[in-house]
Amino acid sequence: MSAKQEDTTQPAARPEPVLDLRDAIALIVGLVVGAGIFKTPSLVAANAGGEWTMLAAWLLGGIVSLIGALCYAELATAFPSAGGDYHFLTRAYGRKLSFLFAWARLAVIASGSIALLAFVFGDYCSRLYSLGEHSSALYAALIVIALTAVNIAGVKAGAGTQNWLTVLEVLGLLAVAVAGLVLAPAVTVEAVSAEPGRQAFGLCMVFVLLTYGGWNEAAYISAELKDGRRNMLRALMWSMVILTALYLLVNFAYLRGLGFAGMARSQVVAADLLQQVWGSAGARLISVMIAVSTLTSINATVMVGARSNYALGCDWPLLGFLGRWNARTGSPTRALLLQAAVVLALIAFGAFMRQGFETMVDYTAPVFWLFFLLTGLALFVLRWREPERARPFRVPLYPLLPLAFCASSAWLLYSSLAYTGLGALVGVGVLVAGAPLLALALRRSSS
Image (cartoon, rainbow, N blue to C red; front, side, top):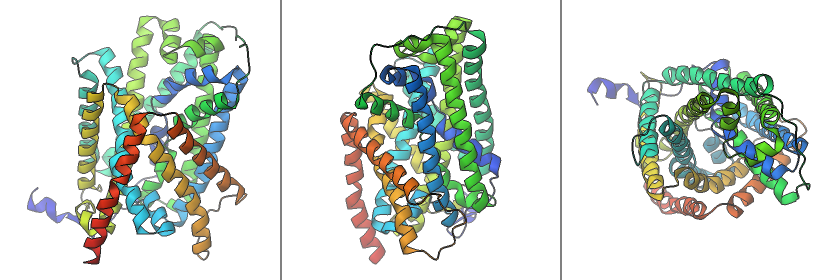
């Protein structure tokens, strides 16, 4: 790094409010709409037992996510910070637990999410043009390097890229909707022999809420959002309305074009629908669309994931090198570089296991839902500890809605441990491995 560049990277530099409402909505929608909506509807249908139960599950998922967004809107407007959840957890529980959360984001949650999305990107790019035996891993590594470079170039470059990718992503979903609702011949909805039990509907909601997941990452841009106290709530609300409408529309399209039984049997529901309408060209088109969707989510997760690493470096001298904000580009350069290194290591691990996507899902889920639950509980703790704090927005129907949000998070924590494999234990083990690092960081801080 040149001397001139070093001068622009000082601890005193801080995030500036440079993102507008449109940027925030594009970021949230891009974070949520990944490959899930092209894969999980068939899994939901297989467990739902009927078309109305299936559609109700998608609507319920939108409502649960909206309740969670209301809780985050209160936290993000009362305590705006580039640290997002890390900042909320620090205020509610102290530095030790928030350190473990930041470690989990660095080593498990954000990095694992980027890696699993990169594997999906690699899988579908490999269908278009294979790079050989490890084609998916190679594509995954290349896209992580490329998008990290874009975000190092500056926050506006990252946000601008995100806006265009989100537009392409939403247009892709609308193309699926048009194919199913307008172009495909209607298929009679077939009944199933029995209604689903509690466990089957529980699995439906696991898949649905995983597909809605990611909106909470908006908290990490709260310090960079113009008029954040007003626009954070607006961004979260508009995003959840857009997402729920898109998901219901696409599921109606799948249902009309393939029928309920056809959805439940399908392994690649969007590809089956488009192949029915446009033949093999449709199958190739869906590969491009899914690649774009995952590209959007990867870029958004790279952008927000580095913010918690930056906050960690600001608070802990042991990791102080992460707490450098580049004033010239408006990005946490070192945090982005370290995040990319961890993700590339996970991609190598996934390639070795030869089940990259599945391994990364198992690896991230339990740790993610554990801290999601703790963040929901932090709303109650901070209301009690800091009652005098100005809260531009308060969750309506308190405490009922926050309790519902915490209950859903606890249930998904249980489900992620009950229905995942060895990868889940590895993820929990990596979280526990943060304890010795915490002890070292405490010793360094005290000295």
